[in-house]
Amino acid sequence: MNKEFFHIRDKIIPGKEIASKYLEEVSQQVAIMQAKHNISPKLSVVIVGADPASHIYVANKIKTCAKVGITSQLYKLPALTSEKELLALVNELNKEKENHGILVQLPLPDHIDNNKIISAINQYKDVDGFHPQNIASLYLNNTTKSFVPCTPLGCYRLLQKIGFELHGSNVAIVGRSNIVGKPLAMLLLLKGNASISMVHSNSKSPHKITKQADLIVSAAGVPNLINSDWVKPGAVVIDVGMNRMEPSGKLQGDADFDALLPIVKAITPVPGGVGPMTIAMLMENCVKAAKVSLKIV
Ligand code: NAP
Image (tube, rainbow, N blue to C red):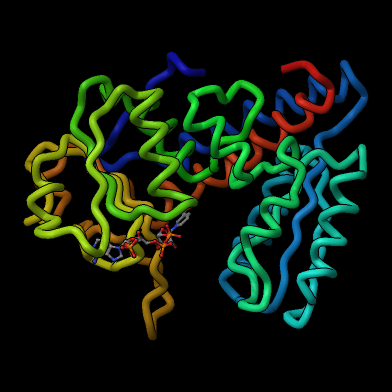
């Protein structure tokens, strides 16, 4: 699959199409695993509280599991669930042999310490790749048996699939969160051999930094932040942002898509760009978790 490149039509990167190719590959791997080892990868998803956006994301993940043959189990817990109760569930799922992946949907309610929960997940079942040990493996560029967070991995694979030459390129990443900006910087630096500039809310003249870049990846969560003043003509823009606009409820990225389209080399749409890749990479991580349990990676 890695040698296959995708055609960019009208400068729009076909994230959904690339993701569905990955999902096809995951389905094939699941079928092989069932035939050879008589097991199906299983993902347990835990959601606490009633945040509507989180419930939509979780429903999508469960739906995609069914599509590719991954067994899933959803644990819906009330918002008042205590940290102790959640830790007890995580520990139980850690022990279940037939359960290969555990995903605790973030954000958690304020009274629960995210880091405590993430650290409690068995690192070999942490398909989100947020466990400190998985982060360390990414920093050490030793990810054969560890998990890379799904959104950064999805961005990296998109870039490979459109044939973007990361080696020696100047990349600006807008946003430095633990789930997107920081792990993506490590991935593009260590696996891509790119030079990375990190832009965040304290950056002085951020547009001057991004304007130097061959590639801009934005994960700020600010609609229309990346406009034509921020982008060098001919640059590639990967838009991770997913901002729900009021009152329309429409999903909008961080990039001013219509203004950028005439000047960029290529750009991801929102929706239909990075989002589907994130879910596809989650499915890939679930298969990897099952392989790790079988000691075949
Ligand atoms: P986050 O934790 O809120 O982090 C946002 C980052 O952006 C922070 O580092 C912040 O800087 C920086 N930032 C905010 N405003 C900025 C500005 N005006 N200029 C420059 N930097 C700015 O967000 P996240 O969880 O990483 O998510 C970011 C966006 O990606 C959201 O829209 C989210 O919904 C989306 N997302 C999409 C996917 C997907 O699958 N497509 C997955 C995950 C997230 P400081 O550190 O200085 O505060």
